[in-house]
Picture 1 (cartoon, rainbow, N blue to C red):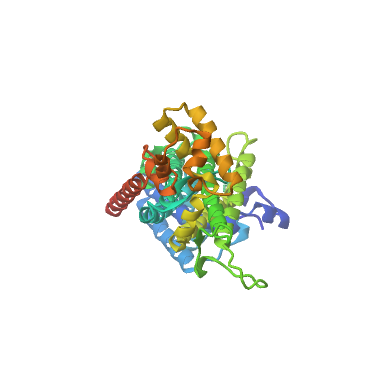
Picture 2 (picture 1 turned 60 degrees about the horizontal axis):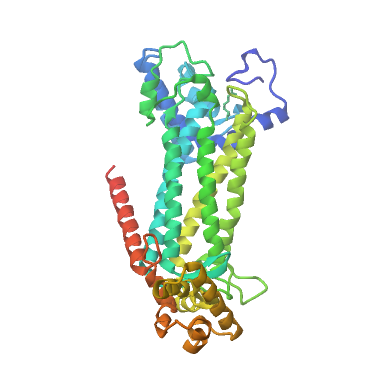
Length: 468
Ligand code: ARG
């Protein structure tokens, strides 16, 4: 039997393999809510423009509501022979309301229909991701405020560099996630034009009102070029790019949690809630959630790459290749959502070992820069010379296998006679972090102030959102 939605000129049905490769219902069922929202806006506009009767529009709207209820209740039967969500919904609508259901598709094509559905889905998902990212920022900023003054080693090249505070380290991720949210918001702004009414590719001869459907669906305006409207997928690409960068941030943090929770670092412990044991090694506590956040970033990056490659050779306007846009996007954004939730969970679960962090903060001559700065400030030495002198002092401490603060004044004066015992004040890690008062630096009062600023900003955002 030929396809009942478009098979007028077809004598027979598709080959089984054709049906299998062609069908998208196995994944685009996830667009059901958006598809019905789009159809309701479309039919209301058709009636307002006198293109269908008010009675037909009322019947179709009622039918669409019933279809939605059946899908929500899990009683809807999805059919692969009907290819995709659009035709599954329309076919069931025809069973419910009869032949007038066929008027819904006036002045519309599946090409603009799928574009509007997918835009709505991506937009809804951006809004959900933004709320989740705000929650992750909150979790990080709360812990940062509590640990604004807790000293830990700061690293470059994963070598001890200079002491920082734990709060400062956590706030670095709050900043990164702030930019991720900004990128998603930018993508949302550019995405927010309605393709509905572009029809197959050329627009339509019916007197439709695209501004009305755009408004009804929460878009800022209709898109300006019908060819572009049905062939544009950069709204997905841009969102996936923002998602990929965000996933990279989460992966970097996950990597740090993995390191911190090793016995060798011992900076933090995750509880039973976010770890697993080994079936053979009873002593083990594995940070699987962190590893999976790190691991899932790989597929999110791959999903972006996949769609870029799918799109790169496509002529205008719609090609069926574009049906391949959905699975990767669902996978990427659903995975990202899970990664954000798991990261927020770990941030709240983590118990830092503050004593161990502080002890480690002094390792590796991490206050050598403070010493060099002291030579510059107090002895008026040029920084390059101070760097050289400090290097000799580090070498001496290394040879004696002691820390810089354990050298005697005589040891130091053997290398630079002008050094006085006032130098010892800058060699402790606490003094070191307290001295970093430059804007954005790690001094505890800076960190506390930054954490408060973020907490206030997040609270006022949440307040504004609750009102809207
Ligand atoms: N299932 C299709 C997709 O996801 C819908 C659009 C089909 N359009 C067409 N002309 N066959 O892209």
